[in-house]
Image (cartoon, rainbow, N blue to C red; front, side, top):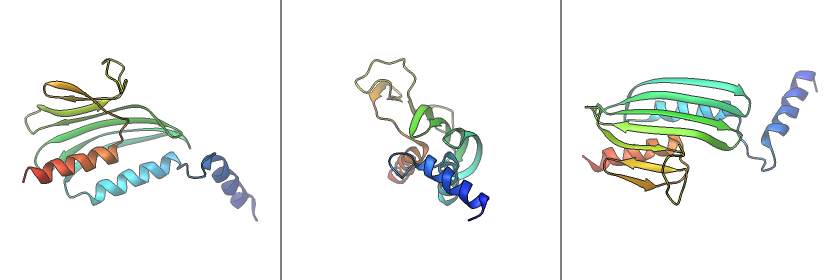
Length: 144
């Protein structure tokens, strides 16, 4: 086995961690990009992917959806934890439909995770862009 192959094997073993299933941040970025390319509701996208280490990175972006609505998002991940996130969906006129975030500014039972709606703050759980995209797709299907 050459030194390059050995280094790859050693790196993979470290990055898999205790569960054996830990994905590199680049794998997560690839999964997000692939899912966005396959989505039938994304008309245009602007995404910035930043890898700080094999286990740490940030993605932020803006998706223009086929109905004219916009989803702006940011996720900061370290290892298997989503340290900071926000997902802000607006209609074509800029009015908020919902926003998920984990900023510690609302006292809910799922603190700090919560969901802003037009007239309320709801409990939530930690959520990522792939789940939010799925929710938006369901909203759009139900509005047809």
